[in-house]
Amino acid sequence: MYTSPIQDYAQLTFHYANGESETYNLYTLATVATGETRSLADILQQGLPAFLSNDWLILQLPEESVCIHLKQVSRIEIKPSIPITGLLGSGERLTSLSRNR
Image 1 (cartoon, rainbow, N blue to C red):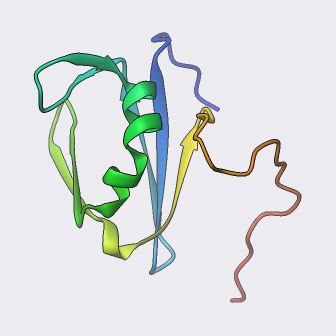
Image 2 (image 1 turned 180 degrees about the horizontal axis):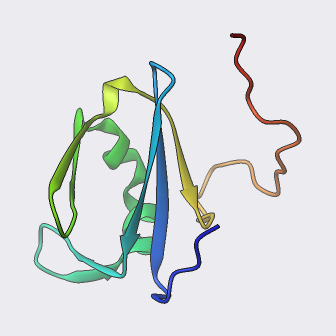
């Protein structure tokens, strides 16, 4: 796994319904609608349900803006793990999802 020199980051991997996937590193602080600056971990932890209820996600990268249609996403992986209230914890993946070809 990539080790970021920046301590506050999250790696998001989007798995699409067509079988493709792509990964993004999101770094440090983000500005929310109220104009306050908060850590990315706090935003993801507290705002995940609202984040997932949107049709589109726009990521602002240094070289481009990427629009992701969340209705086409079948799974999102977030690393490192973030604690979210109400979810099962202390899990461990035993096998990876496999596809028949």
